[in-house]
Amino acid sequence: MLDFSARGLPAKDRSGTSDPYLKIDFDNFKLFKTDKEVRNLNPQWGFQKRFTYRTKFLDKLQRKRLKISCYDHNMVGGADFIGETSVDLFTLATGPRYYTLTLKDQQKPAGTLKFICVMKMMSEVTVSTNNLSLTLKGQPAGAAIHVFPSMEGTLQAQHPYSPDGKWSDPKSMTFETTLWDLVGPEENEHLRFQVLDQQEQLLGEAVVSFCEYFKMDGAVSFQVPVRHNNAVVGELTGEIEYSNCPKYAQLAGGSYQDHPAPTVQGGFLLLAGIPFPNVCQGTPPTLPLQAHRMPLQQAPEGTHDQQPDAQDTAADRPPADSGDVTGGVGMEGMVMTPNTGQGTIGDQIQQQLTHSAPMQQAQLQEIQAQWDYMEEIELPPNWEMRKDRRTGRPYFADHRSKCTCWTDPRFLPENWDQRIDPNSGRVYYAYHKTRQTTFIDPRGLSHGWEMRLSPQGEVYFAYHPTRKTTYVDPRGLPPLMSAALDTQGRCYFKNHETKSTQWEDPRETADADTLARWREEERERWWYELKKKTLEELKQEADEAAAREDMEMLNLGQEGS
Image 1 (cartoon, one colour):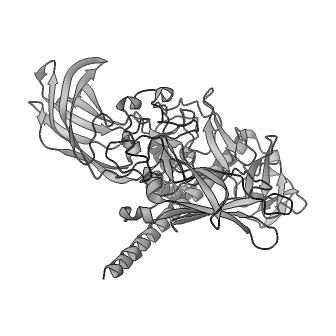
Image 2 (cartoon, one colour; image 1 turned 90 degrees about the vertical axis):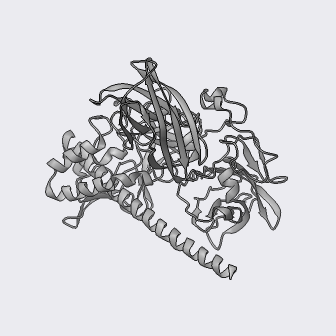
């Protein structure tokens, strides 16, 4: 959920304005509160949140709601209620991404609220290939076939060598995905079939696109050319069968508004026959197959809005190794700097496991064990993680700029957003509070510190314990040292090993190599602790969701009896 804004809020203060903030309740599953916007009747909040919502009761989504309340903050006394609104989760899951709702106070309009909600249903989809038949140069040919799904770099299915080029036994692969990620216009996800001889030498490759050959929980036949060195050398036919596909997918384009009556305007179904909101004016048209192949500006009317949309076409190629000049904290931050481009993540971890000191080895082994769980940590809206098909190295696609980078966009502080300059390919950061940007990464600060941008775009740092600010960057100190500001705003340094403080900045007398090492070590520690904390929170959320679902099942059982 992101891009919350309001228009026409009533004035609650004597000064003729309000300091509005939002409380957001997602089906009692997640509760959020935005920052207040000072003296603003048409506020824009920099708030954005991404999370996984788990439920076993898909048929009950129409009874579950996203509730949003708006309040005026007061320095003394309780907050003043401005208005509230809501929308059911079935509409969110099957409708558009853009919403305009009316805030009401005792049924009286109290302004309008706009926001974006990107909601994707995920499931463990099984894709099976069977009844394969191969011809090379017009004749049946003996070969083995290895099948690779494009979205899973390490997953594969193997059809063993067959002398007559026919395979009747199915081979299956299972992976977690959504309908938009599987057959969406921007993805071009596919199965790649490698044709190998008995010595495992490559004879050719064939590609079967999911968006062209797809059937919800069923089998579909395909017939595709086999190519080698850019020339057609044969043909591959067979069937792809899908099972346990997600039931819901949001519309392509369109918008929802509740005034004068709830309705969805515009939009296309991703696939024919999938559910859509009851307030649609008839059955929405299905997104044409040609829309999966044309640039966004040529897509049919209604498939996109003027606002940035995560469904826009993203670049399929990974970035150049020299693309990330900012050197920000990336997914590879624990084991490699963004600009090295040397080997895969696993190679880097193994190299450090071999050469690290004993105290570091245990930590790095834990990193290696946790690596598979990194994909459970959601990316911000409009971002997607892909993998270099040659090396398996993760990279990130920004659907707004249609560019890619190596820098992981996760774990940014609130009110910050990572973006890519489409002209230079350089990563930069937007600060929603002042609507300014910088190339300096705001992550990696120790507890109590926050990086901000002034209305003029100047970088400064706030220290919350004393509510003071400074232009001195508190990052990059030696291990067991941290920076702080006293009540006068003066910067001093804590030595946690000796439990002493000092005015002298230890960075002033250090050489360039030492400073670089301190920065890298501090970034590694920050990344490790934050990742560990996030994974623990995900596990706790999963346990709480399971307990809540058990309680719902118990309540339903009692109602039935």
